[in-house]
Length: 347
Image (cartoon, rainbow, N blue to C red; front, top):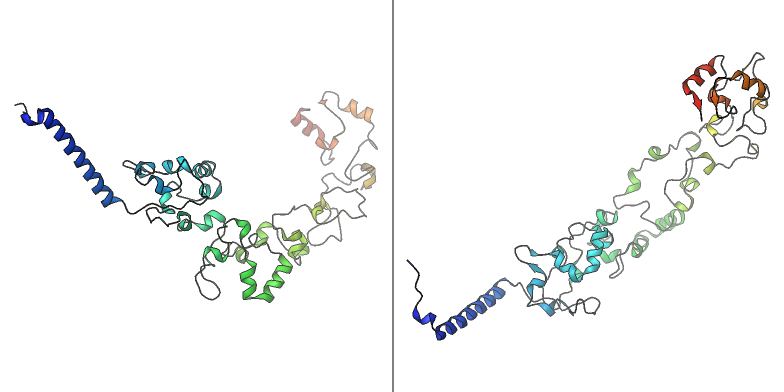
């Protein structure tokens, strides 16, 4: 059975009446929706007092909900960042405040709108910040001030300036204990965060895991190795702290452990010498026999004629006969043939 519309609705007058009723119904529905579901007026505040995308403030497009709200998904960070492109860039590059904070895909977590014309959205932007993750400094020991009062951001940061460079630790701690702070500043300087992370990094730091402070290093002060109290890992080579003494005259190289231990520089004794010191049939050979000029250089030519050495090595292809210890590391009889056969060709 076909549905028959009343003759009245099919007439020109009836169609006009129907259209007017439809518009009225839609208007009433929209008004009811806005009155029921709009939490409140949008903010007129604008931090820089400069138009953004042609708008003076959020209040300028209060009746155009789709600027911020997407159907079904409701609030959308992508729509906010169509105007706030600096935030979009920070998130894309994982840099800046919005690039380091978690959850910046949901702007409403920190910036709650519909709070009235006078609401300043940026004043409530630090409600859900994970300070430890963002800065590496925990607020576990800074929840309360010395007098027991709750601490606010401005206790450590300047007004509206939350960069690391604006942090002031000295004023508060000096007021609480001026004598201790004077001594602390004189010894360690005013850069607090290299040592303190709010938990406190230095309280459970095990120096031996990084560099054992034993034997001859046991009595060292921090500044002996960390010049200017810069606590980045310093070089661990002996020469970084111990200048090559005049007695060496540049003759012994920088492999200090051949003769020295961490217990003390003296007495020094040659403890590592792979090549046998009793090489040949005449007992222990004087150092200067092989080490001419300096102890970082050796030669075998003083005893082994170069021409005869070439004849003895016929059948082997060597790039050079100067590195004898490569095949004769200890100088033991028969050692060279085994070593040379394993290397075949030295290039």
